[in-house]
Length: 318
Image 1 (cartoon, rainbow, N blue to C red):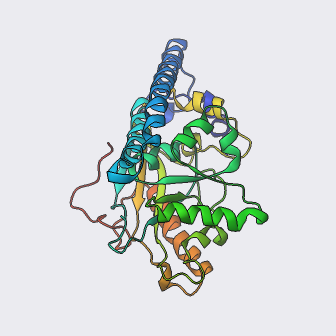
Image 2 (spheres, rainbow, N blue to C red; image 1 turned 90 degrees about the horizontal axis):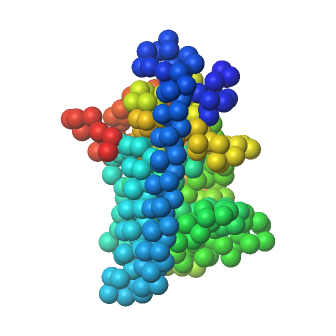
Image 3 (cartoon, rainbow, N blue to C red; image 1 turned 180 degrees about the vertical axis):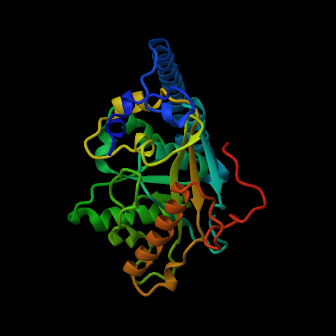
């Protein structure tokens, strides 16, 4: 991997010419980009403080008489506002599945690359995230996650059954969930194998007469930087994985303009059509991996697996 890709916070575009992408930038332009990052961080902080107060009140409202819809709608509005504040546009291909007539909720299963996944998916999907328990203890981020009604899991064998039951209760209460079955974030160049244990949530409880929730594969790729298509050298700038610290990564990325992501929503899968959880996991991974691979090539998927992807006009970043 080029040195520039390993040091995203120091990589700054000088112009739109390919030969000048990694050339040193003048100090004046470097200052301008630093000011852009500061401005964005301040706006995000101010908006987050205000949004936390609003969401705290909405969470207290009962779900009866439709009052509970406010906390779900405002969560999407908050994530969408963050995308706008940091200058990231999101393109959506396909349509999200919704709760069926017989009450079956939806589990959205996506690949995981960065903390930006939360913003891009949260703005487009009416669902709550499933996150590791450590996130609950992070300063500020943990509070935001709790107000966003995130479901936390410890991934300890002794607590697996209890946590699965808690998530099923959330599904029964009408919430959809967003799951990252890779178990960790990646460098964005590939989709790692899905852990089938994560999809135990998609199984109907033993002895239950209810039907399992639908599973919709979701491919997410960050494909625009400075308004240009990303490639092998620039795509790692979005990735947040391994032992990377959040603050330096965010500082380096927020200096750029023209950020873009594409969310590809595949045809929902019915767990009842698969002989085992492992088979469901493999089919879900294949759809997500194939879609992400196509998007990384800066191509628009037009296969039948992407609902509404064969539109006459190319989907736009919004």
